[in-house]
Length: 190
Image 1 (cartoon, rainbow, N blue to C red):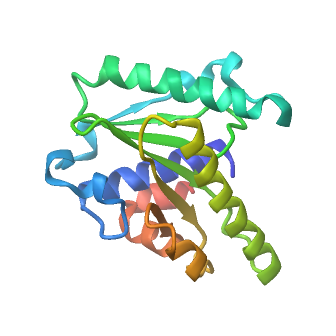
Image 2 (image 1 turned 60 degrees about the vertical axis):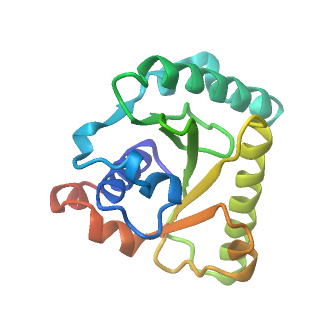
């Protein structure tokens, strides 16, 4: 997905947090994480612009993911005094994640990945599901210090199968969920 689509998806998740949307991970719906407006959720793009964090090849993808997670955790601690929830956009081509949502009060984060909604063939959908499950596994192994909920933002034709439901920390928001949450002016842009 394009960076612009990832940013729109991040804002959609922020709207979902404000509405305590039922398909979000519990950590984002808990009362101590609650926000009454997206203005009370921090949004930071500084790490997405750091060239040294951008993945250049498959060979450095794991190392760059670990570096990004470390810097994002440090940044969340710095900004955590002002923001109880903080969205941090990932650098280009980051393995397994497009943005992170930090919950300061319980010191946890949710990793989110945005997938194209143009996948229609069953084989492509299965490949996408496999890739999402692998991304969830990769982000968890890169952040071995804490449990990580994984949020996939996918197209409307995406069916949640048993292998996805088996992972209790794997959550999905589909295109129709986002359309209901995103204000009309943002829908026109995406």
